[in-house]
Length: 155
Image 1 (cartoon, one colour):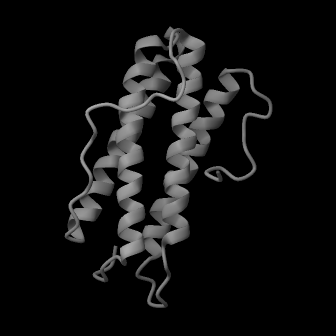
Image 2: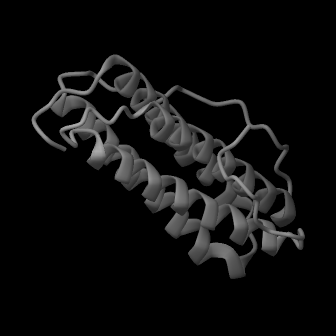
Image 3: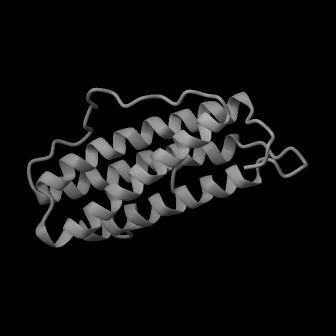
């Protein structure tokens, strides 16, 4: 990012994205416990991707002198997880929720004319795309058709 500080909306949207990433890391721990053996690599990669994105976003906020939100002690799990199918369902839901957060970052990033928000917008597009691809992968594993949504991250 450039030396220009983030505006309040950008800071808040990034803090919300960190919260979503914390929740994703937590949920993927549960997904890992119930996932089918053939999905282990995908679960591990997704969990690592969310940890990496969370850590990078926390660094970005700290660079702007904003203390990022810390992880909660626990999270409400939107899907009861009892077997590999419900684990995949939770993974798809997690990707949808993180896509919502990153779409908000994209929508709340304000180009200033000097390009200062360009990097933030690129970060948000990449994160949103990554979530959409993982969501489609999980939905395909569940046999959903179509596995994609027209506008990922749209409520």
